[in-house]
Image (cartoon, rainbow, N blue to C red; front, side, top):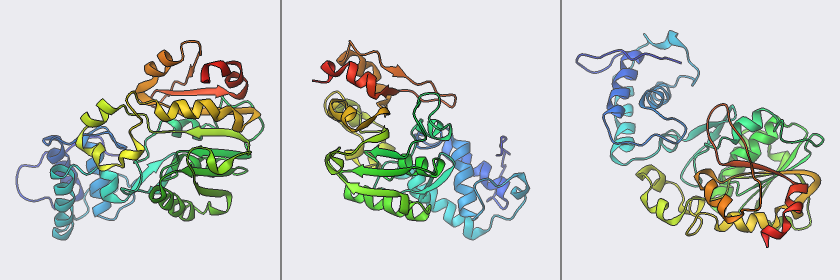
Length: 307
């Protein structure tokens, strides 16, 4: 959308264009951290102002001269107060987030969608997945369900199981499944990792588990502390859950199956933990790292490493 900021000399904004500039300047001069769907003040201002004005997220330049009323200004001020003073992430303020081209409900019950896996989902997991069109998909540690539900949307033949231990996150995942019209093809199950799907096999296992180590969790910007700690931290080195998942994942894959797993910035720690495993790290055109792909055969080949 808009790429330039119009300078405001004085007075309260009275148009969408002026509100965008004013909001962006307020955010830019604050101590907020950008990292929950946006990486700069201008993009956050666009989302915030359009939401307040009840305009679509893809509104074009034609809306810039439209009136921004005093009532809208009051609402924008209230949002900025929460964003700047309380450091609430923007998607929680707006109650929505976008992932893989879809809008998801978003609140404090689950972490905010931001995985680079969105790019893989939109590309049909190519060239990494070599099997037939995936009929059975598992989204492990699903949170609010964005990865599994986006996969179900883009892979119309698939049936997706969404698993998480957190009942609050699962409630949000069910709401998202219903809102997207995907509830019939998606099971949402409470489970301690694979517990609820013992004996089942999948074409794809997608997993974005907690992977923040204890030291970094304590030092993260305030915005991250608004998210559920259960969905972020994973032991002293960030790999507590990752180790458990790797030890069992291959047992739940079909022979042609593929595990795609995100470990974020802990990828060097993972490589040191499993020095004999040649992890295949995926490169993303839109940015992001720390996601690997592993076939069922590769998992089997390195089975000694998981013990």
